[in-house]
Image 1 (cartoon, rainbow, N blue to C red):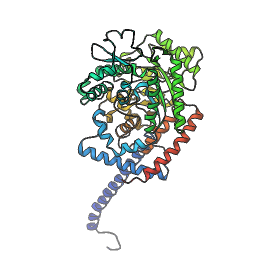
Image 2 (cartoon, rainbow, N blue to C red):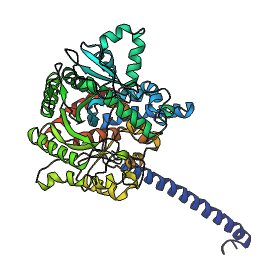
Image 3 (cartoon, rainbow, N blue to C red):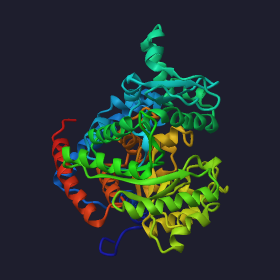
Image 4 (cartoon, rainbow, N blue to C red):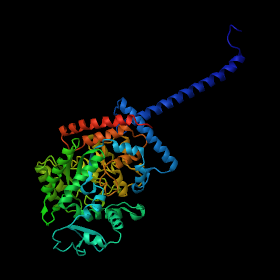
Length: 519
């Protein structure tokens, strides 16, 4: 029996044992395969996300480890306290953001370029209130709704105020009669921004917040278009962004007439030359500052004949100042303006004349999916837009997304602007999140930071890094966004190369400091 094999009794025991072993082996194999498949998917997703394929050197890896440790710490704290800044309205989140260690790192980070900012929404409004409105020869009048309009003049303005406005009053005399000047200045500052303690109540819908938004530009126009203030505003704006480690700006500018104390006015050519001269002087004092370019803009609500004239002006400015004027854009709220298709004949004018006028169209800054407004995204690409301002609805347009990827046309993402103007309340739900996850070409910018109570570019980078990018976004994502801001700028190839070389020096210094940072 021993030589003839196992007994029936032993065979009866062996069969269930073999079955058990088979089950265990199958389970182990399945478990290992699950872990392997899961790991592969994680690696694939990391590779697909914005910056996922970027290589980091040893020091960058060390810096990234410290950055991500701090980021994870803030995520854990947010889960515990139920206070996560990107999920809150920026007006409430700002204080928390400023306490964030991650924010302090992003503020020190050399951020490259800001490619989507508007001329008189760049500089914090405190300076206008506490400096400019204290200057001599400033007059104001009041509209029936209690809004101020300003004018510098000497002698006193002889012309009547704008329609539906009270008589001109000298601000210096008025302040002497005010009981509490500090309180008056605080109220004045409040009218120059959208900042509010209870924004959801104050701005219940987009119509209300946009009306207030547009009124601010109207309100400060008489201050910022006064020639001495105009020049100083540009210089201080560059300084504020430079202090935030931004070294190049592309500014959407309407180029309204600028006036002197005696009432004389300057045209657009004077304004462009002034931008150019102020930026040049600033660069002389700050050698790593690259400069600025202007994107001449007009309001999309105008009729076709007026936009046609504006396109002609843009062509003229581009021809006269090819290194300063980058191109043309239509600005203003998309929902209440005309579409790009409506203005197609005006916008096709340069091509018909064989003139290269780059476009930088605002498109997709709406939440009305599928409407004629939303179709601005579909028209921006055939009209050869160099970049797309906001592109908020791009994730809903697979063909546009595919074509923009193929043509390497980035979107200019402005997180805080999108939230304050009520396109999205929780930035974790920003539609660009899905685009960032697949590496869609994009840059981060700040639109009108002064009006939103922000400064420079760091606040928007924080919202993008912590909220839109989610917990997986790391140093690779940040580095890619910065390199994109250089790559997709309107600079020449030689200028981009010089910019990149200067930026790499600042980046290496930043990384060396971050790599040593204790966690």
